[in-house]
Image (cartoon, rainbow, N blue to C red; front, side):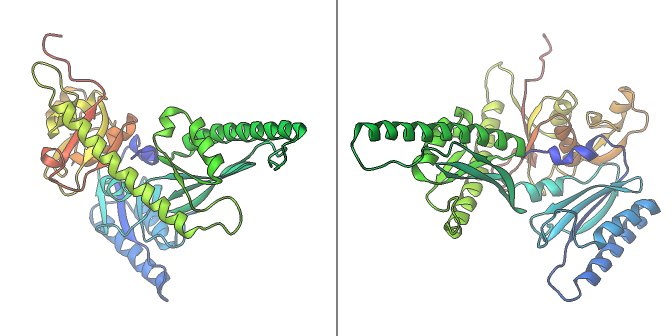
Length: 380
């Protein structure tokens, strides 16, 4: 899971209001229910010491039906505010595991990560011989991601064997190949720009295979094909939707499995070789301070997740004990949860996060990381 959505809140000093709330839509008194929920959240924040301006900003945001551009039927949202301003209003694809309002030194971002972990972004490329349409599918629905048009002449073969016709057939083949190359280049650009994690090609069988073969090797490993749906009006969308769901779920499962395998391999190098994985809060805190975390592993409700650590204003200012930060120059450290502190640091350094829901598969204590490089040894 990429953490770029958290960028607006990771460097900003707190304290922070964090609210996870359900969004009633379908009932006749949905607006009234939203107002009551907004009032309750603001009241809880005030009781925890939040300032009036921040409470009012949260109340106003939660009382609205949804954020700008948010689908109407999303069941939950996470709101983060400080200094009288809502800095991030993030839709949730499912109801939050627990609705709550928190006033704390760091934003409570781990519940957002747990909710967003299964929301794999799939770029669907609807292909025919003339071009392609792109749509980004996620738990928030389908978003138009653009169109590319290739050459429109010649694109249709004939059935005759005349020399001139054979020449024409060759031109058709060349047009198909050129269009496939242009579609592949455009698909790569859109994939990278929209933050997609997996790609599904739908439409003309020959053309989508040609497009797949022309994708860069790294992208081909996460590009799949569907026999359903297409660019033409009236194409079968029901079975394509099932294929999209299958590809998204499969990608998440395979990605978590791959991360856990890499974690175990990095932790069990044997002999005197340095480890490229870490677990346990002290080792993770040290790795986060040194920007060594490549992939952070989180397990909801684990023992280490709620362990108290100490933080300063910066994402790399974190320690197991407050005296450590004071030694490093932070005169007023604050207590925070280990999972939130590590996730903030991971987001700040461009790391990704993976949620492992099975405690039996998770690192000891429930938190772990694959490292960008190993810790320096004493003799180095």
